[in-house]
Amino acid sequence: MVLANASEARRSPEDILYQESLRTKWRLGFDRVIGWLLPLLFIVAILPIADLVYYVGSRALPTLTFQVLTSTSLTQTDALGVPIVSTAEIMVFATLLAVAFGIFGGVATAEYLSERMAGWVRMTANLLVGLPSVTLGYFGYFTFVLYFGWGLSYIAAVVTLAFFMTPYIFRTADLAFTSVPRPIREAAFGSGATGPQYIVRVATPIAFPQVLNGIFLAMAIGVGETAPIVLTTTLSTILPTSIYSPVSFLTALIWENFAQPKGSPLIDLAFQAAFLLIITVIALNIVVRLISYNFQKRIQGLYQ
Amino acid sequence: MMTTETSTPAQDVVMSVQHLNVLAAGKKILDDVSIDFRPRSLTAVIGPSGCGKTTFIRCLNRMVEITPGLKVDGTVLYLGQDIYAPGVNPVLVRRRVGMVFQRPTVFPMSVFENVAFGLRLVHTEEGEIDQQVTEALTRAGLWEEVKGDLDRSALSLSGGQQQRLCIARALAVRPRIILLDEPTSALDPMATQRVEATMQRLKEDFILILVTHNVGQAARVSDRVAFLHSGRLIEVGDTAAILERPRDPLTEQFITGRFT
Image 1: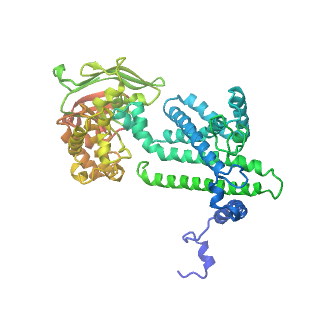
Image 2 (image 1 turned 60 degrees about the vertical axis):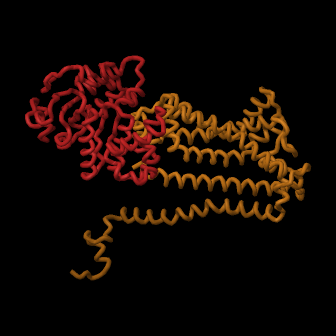
Image 3 (image 1 turned 60 degrees about the horizontal axis):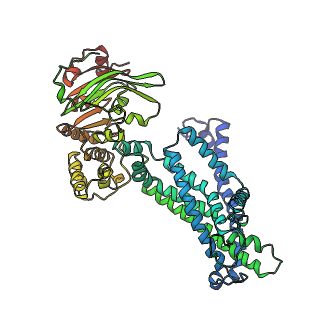
C-alpha cells in the first residue's frame, strides 16, 4: 500500500516511527535533552578549573625560573627550593605511614574482621574522610604537639598528615580486597592456600593496581592540605635538621605569603607555589587514570 | 537409605562419609548421608537443583567452612582419619582433596604459574615444579595446546582451556581425590567433551567425585552414581544399574526427566 504522506505512516503501529502515546514521546524527548545537557554540564564543571589554571599560571609563569625552583636561598623571598624539598620529604614519610596503616587496616577489615566489626571500622573511616581537615589539624596540635610534647615540628606535621591520608588508602584497600571475585577466592583456598598465602599470592596481584590508585589519590589530596600542616609546625626557611625542627610546606607557604601586603614579592612566590601544586595534583590524577586504565585491560576476562 | 552396592573390604576405602548432616539456620541441607569412595572410581553425584550436591562435596575438603553459617555434623574419614577432628587444619585437607569449580577460576598469572600455584604453597623445588607442571598439564589434556608458550596469561585461554587448566592446577599437588563441582556447566559442547575425556582418563589414577545435574554426563563418564534428593542420599550404585533400573521412584523420576 502506498501511503499518502509521512504523518499517516506514523499512525500505523507497524511503522518504526510510530509512537504509542504522548508519554512515550515525552520520554524520548527528555532522553534527548539529557543527552545535550550532560556535555554542557561537563563544560560548566571544567570552566572554573581551566580559569584557575590560567589565572594562577599567568601570575606565576612570568617570574618562574629554574633558579626559583632549585635555589635553597635562606631568605625564602625569591626561591622555592626549600619548601619543594620539604614538601616532598613530608609527603614521602606521611605516605609511607599512611600506606602501612591504610593497607594493613584495609586487608584486615576485608579478610579477617566479622561483618559487624568491619561495618564499624568502615563507618569510622568514612567519618574521618568527611571530617574537616582543620579538625584533624587541631587533633594533631593537641595530641602530638602538646600532649606528646613534640612541639611545632617536622614529625608532628608528618604524623598528622599521615592520619589525614590513611582513611583514603584504607577505603580503597578494603574495597580492592573485598572485590576479589568470590570464585577466585574459593579456588585459592580450594588449592590449599592459607589465609596469608591467599592474600599475598592471589588477592594482592588482583587488588594492587586499585590500591596504588588509592595511594596516589591520597597523595593528591594530602599534598594540597593546609590545615594539618599550619597547625602542627612553624614555617622554616631552611631544611629541617632534626625531626623536631620547624619545616616548610608549599600550601603553608601560600597561606602565609598571601597575608603579605600587596606588591610584596612574597605574593609572587605564593602564586608560583600554587601553580606548582596544581600541576602536581593534575599529574597525580593523570597517574591514577593511567593505572585504572591499565588495570582494566590487565584483568579483562577475570570478571566474566 | 537404600543402596545397590555390594559390600567390599573396608581397607581400600580412601574416603568414608558417615552420617553427615549439614544445618543452615536450623534447616537440614544434608540429612544423614553415608557413602564410601574407593580408588580408581568416578562417582557422579546427581540430583535436582538445591538438593545439596554442591554442599555435599564441599564437605569433603572442608570448603564448606568458607561459607559462614553452615554447621557440619558427622564424620568424614580420609584414610581412617576424621578430617573434622579437632586439630586437623583444613588447609592440609584441601591439599589432599583438590577441587574444580563450576566456572573456570584461573588466577591472573601465567599458565605455568597457575599450575605451579599449589606447589609453591608448599615450597617445592624448582626442578620438581617444572616436572609436575608438565605432568599435570599432560594429564589434564592441555599440554599440546599450551606447551609453546607457558608464560602467556591464563586469562587469554578459552573457557574450556581455562577449565582444564583448573583441573591441571588441582592435579599438580597430587591429591588422592578430586572434587568437580559441575565443571562443564559454563562450557560449550565441544569443550564439555574434552573435559569429559580428561575426567575419564584421570579416574585411572585418582578418585573423582563429580557433581552434575546432567544425567547424560553421569552416564557417559561415571562408573558409580549417587542420587541426592532434599539432602538425603536416595540411592547409590553402579551407573548402568542405577540409570537402567533405578530402585527408588524418586530416582526414576529424576533420570527420566519427569521430575517435579
